[in-house]
Length: 270
Length: 274
Image (cartoon, rainbow over all chains, first blue to last red; front, side, top):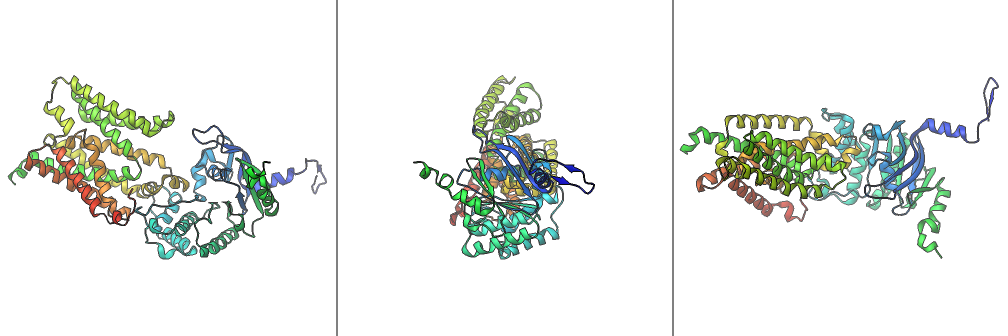
């Protein structure tokens, strides 16, 4: 029930106001979204509804093949949804995918570069700026400085001129994170960002993520390693078989995640 | 070297250098964007088109261009729409183009290996005209300017097309631009090595340059130089041994690639070269 200053009283169903306010502040909105891979019959994600607000930190957890990566790539439009609507910054991703992706930082899962690849670490990080710079414009000193700054945050500035394929898995992971950060994204989509990292980086990267989140960037982190959920996190989504089965605070969501039906489905069957 | 004073040989030499330079440059993009199958089919499409030109007394350059563009269309957008894998379409289009080429050559008014038919099959730099040299020079200049303009997009796509899309780059026009360039380069280089061997001209220099460098900018600079050098060396070899120019160019180019693999510091370190 809403009571305005002029004493007009409106009767609305419970939760409507919260939903309206949420929609207003939302920067990512998925409405009944399904995504099916080419040649597949079964959708990888099914009728997913999700809202992400400004400056929100969301973890997506779930077993293998739950649809976590598909969800991220449907949000940034690298995969076209086969049903429903995806809105990012209020724009339909189907129609404005490219524009949206210029403001989204994306770190893919297990992105490993071949040792023979003829690119330096700095080359890869600079590529993150290319979409934003726009066609026919060349990267300038500011772009270069932003790239070096992003690399410095991740402690890889000394590797700038090294061939990216010759770096360790953890160093390559940091190069990809720097590539996502260099475009000053409004939203960061991180797919298993803690895999391949050495012990020192496992401490450093979460701190960096917390700092970026503190600057007002909304972040979605896909992970299977629930032990690495940051204390700043207020919301965890659990996925299974392409559906969201829980969307709650970390404590309650992780209870669902750790239940035998989600984590060890075969063991749960008598 | 009295023969160098002959205008016909000067044209052949310049044509060799330009075609070698151009195919070495475009080849880097074709190899890195994994367009080898498309390039392979397009070169044979150009061969079939040139054969049709000879049979119908139409400028073979025009028909070669039409056929290679049609092949690119079939393998690219049409295969996408029909939801066919590029490999499947390539396997069908390649023998189709070869069959059409031989049918057209048989239909030629002067049945048999006339000089024109032979030039389509094996290439003949001697038949390179002034206008061919002008076309190749213009094409070199235009390609260099476009590569300079769109370098950052091409650079990102060559690394990983999906990540380039994730950064908001519209990759499709650039991939189609490179496919179009392959078609044009193949068409204008047909006179040099002929329809059967032109594929080597496109891919050997880039594959050789990739053996040595860890810097893509160096590869883009060196591959055209290898292309031009092997074409000129092949021309010289053919003149000294009185063998077909196209075959000599491909032999030199393949030898250069084998030499590059033997010396490759990357291979010695066990790196996979792509």
